[in-house]
Length: 302
Ligand SMILES: Nc1ncnc2c1ncn2[C@@H]1O[C@H](COP(=O)(O)OP(=O)(O)OP(=O)(O)O)[C@@H](O)[C@H]1O
Ligand SMILES: [Mg+2]
Image (cartoon, rainbow, N blue to C red; front, side):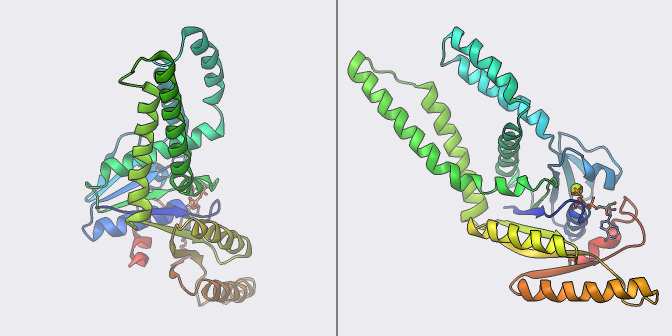
């Protein structure tokens, strides 16, 4: 049964670097690991210098990768709605709604719902195949908010199902005909089933953990405080903070000495405010992160 780790954090703090390095760390330890990017900019491909796409591929021993493209998933998602609709509604209405669905494909809400569905599908399908599933999220920050969806949607779906059952009961009373299968109810129930399986894995089983990457600077610290509060309100645990790009100790240049003093104050702020969290500290490296340098960061996740 997989442990699921989500990496979040402000734009550019090092989410892709740290999630990739962390997955290499687990793979080196012999754990079967799946690294998934939900960023349309497809950055794990860039770091690992290989083409990773919509299908799971092997990256190295014990490590597989996958990139989810929210735009592509949104199209599939809307197509599924179109198919479902055809079985329920008359042709005239279908045509009218189709026009509206064309517009929905490009709306951000659709991308998020489609992304959530895809993430849920992978977690449910691959839960038994991998020891660890790591998600590198996009900088917009919306991906983590998606994790609050099962909690919010479950009650809502329950209500829709109840209402649909009432409508069917009324229909039966009026027409005195008993319909064995109702396509609307089937769709609603299937969706509710998926929601409760994902909720069970993520929340009830406590298999989910969220890691925040930040730099020892004012804005990332403020943003992390807010995000952690929001997630914990939904019982989504942020157990670990990864402080990335820590300056070296022995500096003699005046400018960097001053920077280091400031950084130490921010580090103390992080240690005090997040006293209950595990802190992982990653130094600033003298090169960009790529296929040959990423391993040098993996060891800090021990
Ligand atoms: N510890 C480090 N030392 C040196 N360079 C680093 C370190 N961490 C990250 N970088 C570099 O900083 C840049 C941004 O890192 P990364 O892409 O991991 O951030 P991100 O949070 O995923 O960004 P985005 O929000 O755009 O997805 C990259 O060029 C990466 O190579
Ligand atoms: Mg990234």
